[in-house]
Length: 60
Image (cartoon, rainbow, N blue to C red; front, side, top):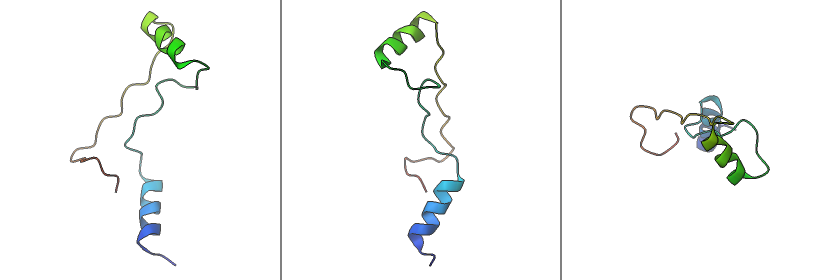
């Protein structure tokens, strides 16, 4: 049975998420140490995701 909730779930599943991925590729043991390493240039952080035009903070 297809209802509004199922349509919304399918829509969100097929679209790219509008949120940022985690700042590094793999979860570090200590986030504070990872941020210090990024400040020193030892690791690189992911860039923020660009906000789609007309985005008002609600998915869907």
